[in-house]
Length: 322
Ligand SMILES: Cc1cc2nc3c(=O)[nH]c(=O)nc-3n(C[C@H](O)[C@H](O)[C@H](O)COP(=O)(O)OP(=O)(O)OC[C@H]3O[C@@H](n4cnc5c(N)ncnc54)[C@H](O)[C@@H]3O)c2cc1C
Image (cartoon, rainbow, N blue to C red; front, side, top):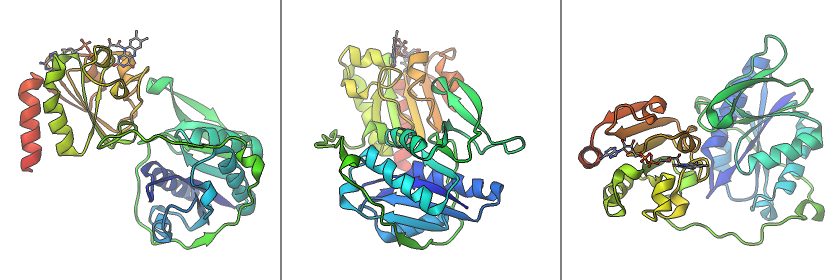
């Protein structure tokens, strides 16, 4: 039996979240005593060399469904292809990244192959008594443990919860000829408008965000300078966009964009629960605030207490100099 991992791509590269999923699958295979970790790629946008490199994260084989009509991520069609790959590889464990594509696909696959599904999983399962997984719930405020009782199990991994490990060699890539028909495209993406901007906020690996502590829109230049230096996207708190200091698509939080970068830098943001709901999947949080009692410091990995107007330019200069 094998473990099947569905990998997503963007602009010709495998998404980091999917590398995390492959690393998770490799560790799971070791714990379960399985020898095969089969990665499944759908569409034609990733080169064979890139697919083969999934061996470094622990894939023993890569199945490539190279059909152009699948490039757009139509969930029904993806679910159909993944279900066929599950049958073909006789996989009992299916791993994928929790994402805007992964979530609807996982739910459809679960129904097709009669599998239990756990989403937002943050750790390897406890196998001492059944198959028990730890899930992040309530936008990261609590954990739930869930036992998966069916033979087939689907595990959707939370972003940044699993380290990407690199050790192995390239894996062989095989064409997988899944059949797709019109019914798989009963809902179709006909048009996509891509947001403009240097770095897109939902996908950004580093985010520099500002709050009401920035005092006014005229002060955003220093945050943009820091963001540019780091190759980061800019975000803001809700009141900032409500006051039109920044565009609404930059508003981060429960009612705004949910981000999950490796690094989130919050400047002059108090850390209200509604803001934290949008950032608590970040791997590292750095908070700059003049109030040592600001709630955000409780969620921070690193905190700097002081005036943002002094600290941010110094930080930018130091990064430029390094
Ligand atoms: C239903 C609902 C949904 C909401 N959704 C969201 C959401 O999605 N996202 C969101 O952000 N909010 C949301 N809010 C609003 C949220 O409750 C807070 O009001 C908001 O996050 C506060 O924004 P802020 O931290 O920028 O401002 P403030 O709370 O005013 O905090 C400003 C911070 O800046 C610090 N500061 C001031 N001057 C400086 C300086 N010179 N240097 C350094 N620090 C300084 C202060 O110490 C303070 O901590 C929502 C509220 C409700 C009721």
